[in-house]
Length: 128
Image (tube, rainbow, N blue to C red; front, side):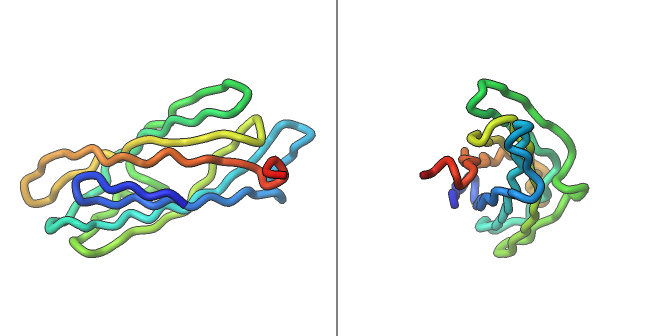
């Protein structure tokens, strides 16, 4: 699990290898990740956009950008948190992800960029 705080917003990431949805022989490895966004600031924020950087040990790299997360643009009140689960497909058993969320301070309408800390995606059988 990794965590990072940017401008009063804490991002925590947990990862889970999904063996039932993976096919190592076909170089398909699915990883789920749970993101917890906690608003430690004094003002409500709204998550507007996400921007991911995803790479694997084969050297492939891709970016994923879009509105919200899992089809939502949540408003997170001061002292509250929001959690969601998503997934990433890799072509190798080892990879990493990191990125940013664009959020809006709902009091002054200022846009803020919140860092998503880099996290590793490693199939458990590679750890032996």
